[in-house]
Length: 390
Image (cartoon, rainbow, N blue to C red; front, side, top):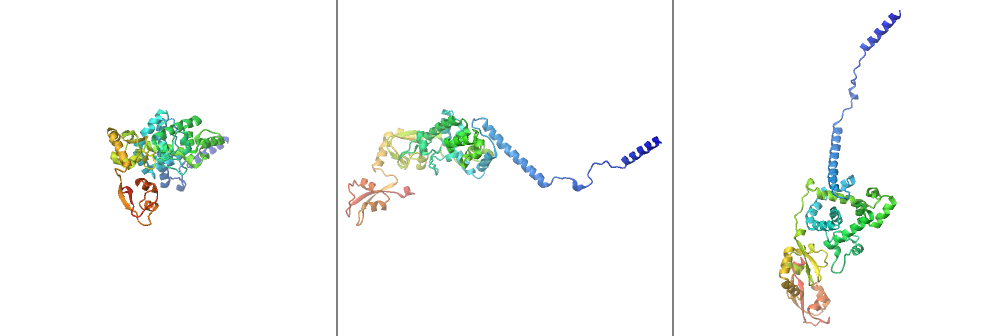
């Protein structure tokens, strides 16, 4: 009986197994999760963005391996890279042109002071390589020195000259300032932050946060200083990989290697040098931005094209005779000599205003010891020509 029951049980189990499906495929098609076209496209976009960001990170890593500056990569830096290769593309084209005039000077002095050569790009962040650049706070020159900081580092400011606008002197001052800041903070990102915000401000933030890591301090800094280091790193990137982004340089006007220096022993001005050396006045101003009001004082050191310096020295005696002749009005440049007849109601101030000259000039030109005039008096007046006015 037990054998019969066991046999019946075994047969029932086999029957059930034989008639039960073991197919594991889904019978309801709406339960299958299929990737949509939007999902596929989104995944591809994310992958492409990730690959692109990896390229920027790898390129910065290449630069970082060649400097102690700490050229890290993050999305804050990427924001400025995107700006430079996009909206501010024209600025980079201009910087690629002007750099030939200033970068050799920067590199030479940075090397002398044993400083990272990448600091040359800071002048782009500070002034866009404009030696006469002035900020709302009063900072001036390629390296944007404030008056007191400039004085501290030997940059003199007079009625005729502003050394903060002198490319050579201001670069030496900047190098000394970099050394002092590195001595204080021992980290180049902190040096940059202190250069922008001031060492006292930065030290207070370090004390508040309790860290000497710039990126720890980053969220606690004022906006300008917070953005300063990312902007500097992005500038290093774009000036190194501009070709990869289709950026080309504007035409090159002049290079550092074609420039020489000369000391002028007599006071002169831009228009006199321009006429004497056949140089464009704009070029003379560009090469000598530290001089105010177009006046070069006695014993001034000038930067001029090498060919012009050679011409001046080969004809040095004649050059000074010409300068003195212009000063004495024996030779006129961009002006003409008029004889004015004094009329009823005239006085020196009225005449000076009419011809856009000063009362002092009228007295000097006419050897006047008094302001009294008589009707019919003849006055010599030197007026600017139309060419000069334009």
